[in-house]
Length: 131
Image (cartoon, rainbow, N blue to C red; front, top):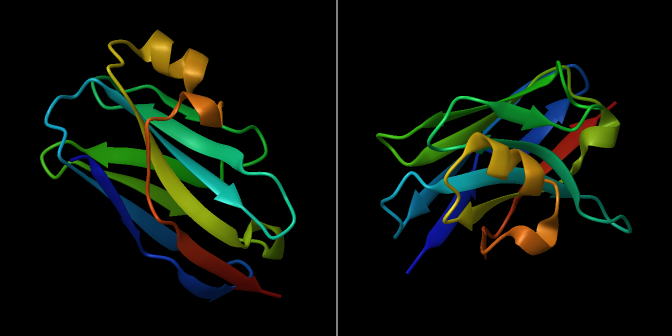
């Protein structure tokens, strides 16, 4: 059974940093694309960043590029989202999600931004940013 468990959320002041973690279990192959999404109250879920487990390329929403960084540790089956220079608008529930049976960076790039592509979702971790 595939499971995703996020951690690392919390409350920070504007300008602060947080690192979110997403641990994947029940899937031993590197043929997956992992994405981070966020959803604020009353807003649609939006893609933040993604990474292909079998490659090195990373993908970002343009508005978050430069402040957020996604990385992975395949030995731990864990993907991280480092968030710097946080703003009140970054406050949201953050979710990680996985598309399995992905075999190339190109395939991850083509699919990562679409929520319907994802097979598995974590329960979310809350990020609060105070001004």
